[in-house]
Image 1: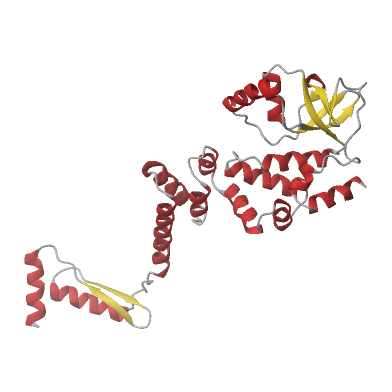
Image 2: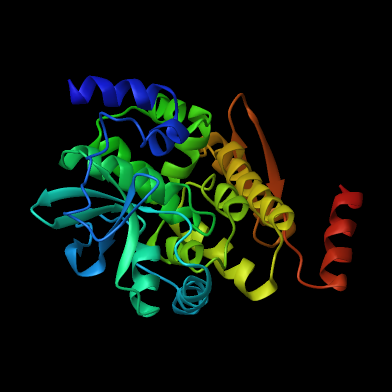
Length: 302
C-alpha cells in the first residue's frame, strides 16, 4: 500500500515527493510527552536522537558554507525542517537535511524541527538522492553519479528518470556519458576546471589519448567551450583524412620495369606509386636547384 502511494507521488514529480510530507498518512503524530515541544504539527527533535543517513549520496560539505549556515541558525533558527524516519523509541534516522543538521550541531543547538515520515530503505535512498540532485552547487560528475544511482537502485530507465526529474531523456543520457570519460577528465569536472560544455565536446572524441590531449590544451591555454569544439573538429577532420587517404597498390612487374628505366634515364631514385584503376603518380626527387635544372634538361632534351 505504501509503495503504490509512493509511486503516485513520484508520478507528480520531485517537488510533490518532497513537499507532500504533511499528509496525515505519512507523518507520525508525536505527542507532547514524546518531545519537548511541537510547532504547527512539526515536532522539534533532540539532535542526539538523530543518526545520519547511511544512504547519504553527498560526501563533501563545504566548511565555510556550513559556518555561514551555522551563524544564521544561531540568529534565526532552522527555517526549513529536516526530514527523518522513526526507527525505534526516541530514535530517528535522517532522510534529508544533513547540512542543516551539521550546522545546527555547530551552532550548539539541542533540537531541530523535523518532518517524521514512514519509509523503507529503498524510499530513503530515493528521497536522499532526489534531495541531493536539487542542490545548486553540484558538479556535473556528482549529478551523473546521482543519476546512475537512481537508475541502479530504483530500477529506472533513462526516460523514467527524465520524467521524474522533469528533464529530457537526452539530458540524463548526456550526464551519464560523462562517467565513461577517463579519471583525469572526471577529476577536472569535479574540480570545475572543465564545464559541462567542455566535457560534451571532449566526449565526442573516441580515442582516450586525444581526449587527454584536449584536456591538456584546455588547461594550458584556457580554451573556451567554443575553442574546445574547434579543436575537437580539427582532430576529427584529421582522422577523416587518414581514413580517406588513397591506398597504394603493390607495383606489378611491368611498372617496376618502367621505374627502373626512369631511374637509368634520370640517374636518380624514381618511385612509381600505383593506385586502383591503373592510376598513380611518378615521384622524382631533387636535392638542389642545380639537380632540378639537370632533371629539366633531361626532360626537355627527350
